Image (tube, rainbow, N blue to C red; front, side, top):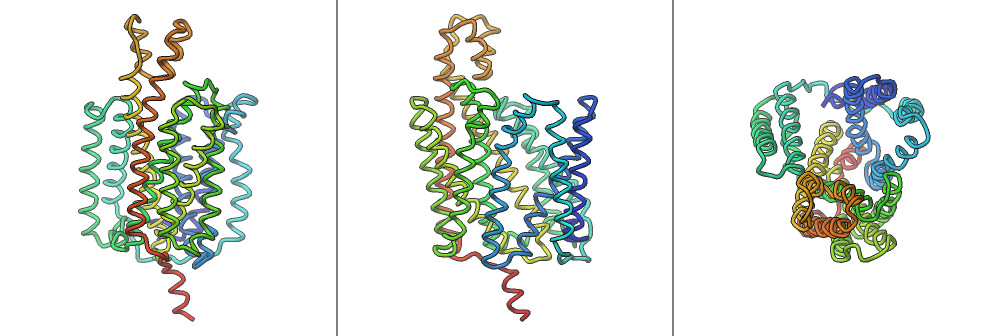
Length: 436
């Protein structure tokens, strides 16, 4: 909203500067409290960068160029997710812990110069005013819902510490929707969702985040508890998924021009579902090469589906609403990822706890085993016969979670086939054509 009001470029530069300064503050934090505060500002800067960089794509790259720009942007975002643990793990093993944050600084400096030089001033909406009730209600609602979903993944859906925040979050967000329909300058323009491209593209992008973050939650635990990989090795073993996503996004660009976003989106969800089914059926009876194969398939499908969903959603935005639209898409994607972690985590825990054998163990040890597969592996160091049960139970729980993901991927394929258009709308290209 602020980007649309005062200028996207200005807030991109400000967000990048804040991200760099917060990185330095994190690196030299001398207490947990100061680190948490610095991390909050780091998140604030990142929020400007992610949502407003998407808005820049929509305005600067209309028509066929948007697809290529979106592919590059999506690959950069996708690569960053697992690359963080890999590079961070190496830095922690080799250098001072603050180097994890100082690594950001040279990229911030180069990015600031390039942004100031290459990105022009973009259209603004000077009439827009701050919607304080909307900011408070949406912020409180999202925080409460996110907290409740994370608690549900850890403590179960009926725990009061999970159910209470979830219900409060839903109530606050419902109040937010009511308020937004009545204020003159709403934080969230509900009219965005009257456009089929934004509505269905946003929903499908949320589904892709559900699967992506859910799988990224499952796999490191699998590599650790079942395959005995350390943190750095587990991060490296995620790379086939990243490569798959990169291939999927690059392939999706030429394919969508020939076949349309409907075919690319539905096909991506089907490939994703196929990879998830193979992973669910295979269990742990194969080597890492087989795991890399099905994980790569999931990545290729995700790359195609993400590309189609975002291309359809962004094309429906006019320049004056690009900042708000990009922010809404990021909220949808974040909530989708949170749901993925919470729901798949609950399915995993239920399957694991229902299968692991703790017979004959003293209660403290049994509780540690039931709490997580990592805890079970630690107990198994002194009770070797337990390790097989822990690994088998974890694979059982993970298989159930992968079946849930596969079912949702099939739902995504059906929605894409039914509601995505053959060609994505392009409001900015239409505006430029009309102005000639």
